Image 1 (tube, helix red, strand yellow):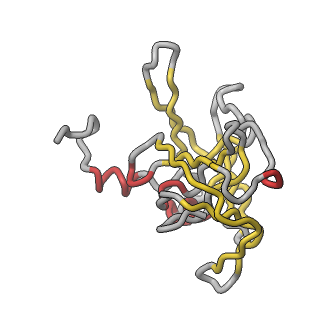
Image 2: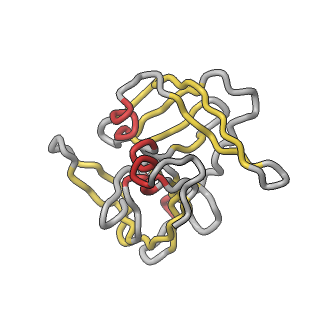
Length: 176
């Protein structure tokens, strides 16, 4: 086996990558509340991977401030602090109302610490209700059949046009 470039084992990397996020606008990112809870810091660091015109990657980390959370939808909003103007590129917004059962969708995340992963799934159900640990229910969920672990949590769910149609808030044997 080839050792990872950073010298960390796959399990060490999996524990350092808690989830994913998406850029909502030029200063805010959206992630799963599970990710924010796991960090246990109201001002976590967020790291962005950039690729230049030559395909070279670099990482930039910025402090972020938790400015909102909705336990009922399991979503958290962070304001990124110190990023240069124009650094964050917002996702193109689509609409989940146009989704149909059987349609392909795509999740981006970091399952098991493997960054920049893409998983294709199929819309298995719409307007689903899923129970949470606290006995509440998440409503209006898009049920996705496909490989989505907790590393996809907080990342975007995209339609076949690459437009944002949802935020991944649960993972496991069946993505949600």
